[in-house]
Image 1 (cartoon, rainbow, N blue to C red):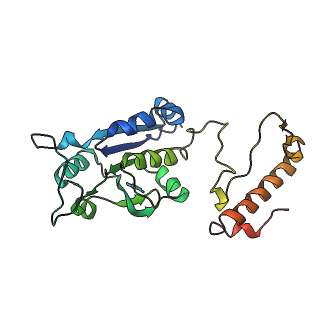
Image 2 (cartoon, protein in one colour):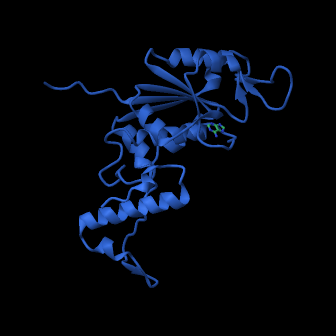
Image 3 (cartoon, rainbow, N blue to C red):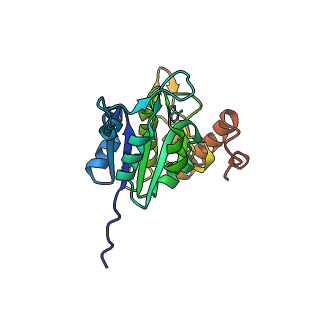
Length: 237
Ligand code: ADE
């Protein structure tokens, strides 16, 4: 029986600077994945849902204070227009849950992600309370342009979708797979400025190479990121 094709994961990004996302996702592996129909990415200018004469999507915070806050009306209208029952609405925010490989894998089997990006301001809390399913931070720092965070998430999620990475760009052995960091990589020439590539990599012995790589990953993780893994106890024989 011919299996029906799964529909591609769709990302809709809501932001004040949608071109930031467009310019990033049109390039390289994501650009190719979109052209091949493996993912669909659409970015939207929040001002398109503003009813104001000047298309305002933000306003000053009640109670005073610096900065602006994204208004609830355009966000509610936009999210309600774009969402379907199976959509997950994610607010990219520095105070959200830390984004990890595990989360990227989980999200890669979604059908539709609606990503809300802020810009040097927060969003009205009612949006967070009523519309948003998950709040996600890409790190403990604050960006001026939350579209960058959305672009990072799209990139990291998409590479877990089968077919997005070519055969050359394997997910195996890279950082955070198995809770280990990646191993050192070398290419030609075998000797450069007197520095030689580790002999084992030139040996052609795939078992030895796999063992060496695993050991390197364990040692690197143990010294740089001991918090990551209990796998650093085990060196494969
Ligand atoms: N918007 C601003 N800073 C951010 C961060 N660190 N993560 C996600 N979204 C953000």
